[in-house]
Length: 322
Length: 257
Ligand SMILES: Nc1ncnc2c1ncn2[C@@H]1O[C@H](COP(=O)(O)OP(=O)(O)OP(=O)(O)O)[C@@H](O)[C@H]1O
Ligand SMILES: [Mg+2]
Image (cartoon, rainbow over all chains, first blue to last red; front, side, top):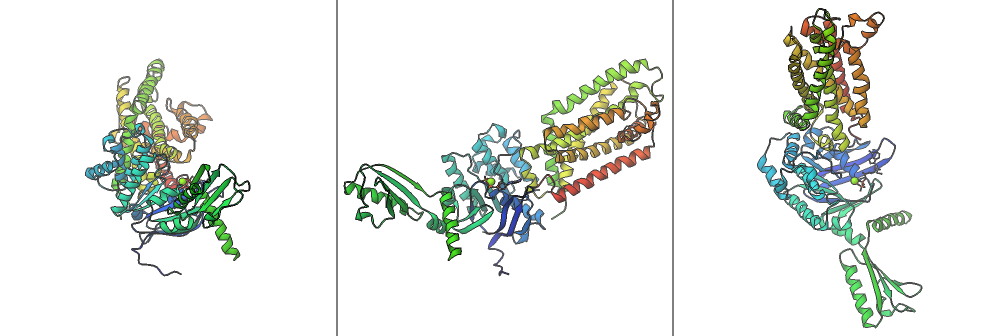
């Protein structure tokens, strides 16, 4: 038995959470996860990893097959009534009564959670999400990004201390995405603990204090964002040369570079997920120019989630074999 | 925290009534039109040929409770079933499931609203009926009580239907293929005393017979069956629905994955 840290520290403690759906598919497999009070936690994982199932299990949409969930230091199964009142959920799908006007819909949410009407509070929420002008518009007449913000407003209407955002930026354009990141940061500043899911490394990197990586129903790793980026971040660059080289010039031996068999492509794999890779590639291209080696194309990208999984899984195998 | 949050229940109730007013044309006008047509066809055209009425009551007046019940059963069932099926279908139910709301608030909200709509409808139909026939209600308070009881019971039944259904087809199949025939065969337009044996005995197996006769007794003081049996069966049906819903909520059947 582990020694319990002071209850203030963790706002959510999940132990051995398993969910097997009716058809026999196991979407969560013995998940252990602690969320700290006041943090922004990003749950990062590919399609079908079990992110939505995990959120559903905490919020009462999914009945866990086994395991325990404690929120605010109390058992969710036993004290669901008072605990749910302190938790908010923005679902992945845009699902709500689309014929309702924005203001009424948000007011309804507050009432559903048993709170007295508070028009001033609702006004503040709508203004913070730039929805005030649209308060009398039917939700169906809003754009997708606005609809998502209405769902956020609905989830915030009862002033939750713990807020789940299931892919908050899905279908939101780049500019609005920055906006939303900003709004999520503001929620944290007001003291709300935020747990969000995403497919995008950059998104986790941009917003989160800590990141958990989930795949096939298992949490592969949880760490501070910076630590994760350092461990997993990689830059990969392919430099296509105009003339083939017979061998890699000595000047590049300090970099993690390989040359293709035909001598036409240099491949760089390295960096630390914190800008080192990009800086390296810039240095390499300058050095090429200095040495009079001409190139016709550079293809550069940051490691994808899939690359990270491959790394993690291979790393795990090596550890097991060692 | 308390076991019943009146504010949550009230919020659901209000929301459901608002939704009904949005579709007022369908939920109010349609039943009024249908009922009027029944009065024209059965009350005026056919009833006009019947010199002695039915059970000593003018035929047009005789069918008022039956017609009322026909509408109440159909509308209570479909209102409550749509009320819970639609959010399940669109996914909007996530909010209810994640809220600190239990079976009591949910029922008070959804079933209360469906029953309220039925009561409003009953008042409209009874008013419409006065345009076609003269009738008086012998036991108005019992009539109100019985209408309330039937509305609540079938709203509960509709709620179960809306949770059970996983397609729009199933949602309409029960009212169309079960409720409607039972109601028509249940003595809505005639006294089952008129049936020859063995059909009279067979008819007694139809639960709607007891509902129609219970309501008819409150109107005219006459019934084909014991009104205590009517009342008992209706209460038993209500209790069974409540028990089933409590069970559904405990297991999360069709609501939570
Ligand atoms: N109701 C259900 N019945 C059966 N299987 C389900 C059900 N809901 C989800 N699953 C399965 O469980 C797995 C995890 O699904 P989940 O929605 O939790 O993934 P996710 O990480 O949220 O994916 P995405 O990024 O695509 O939203 C998937 O393989 C999915 O097919
Ligand atoms: Mg998901």
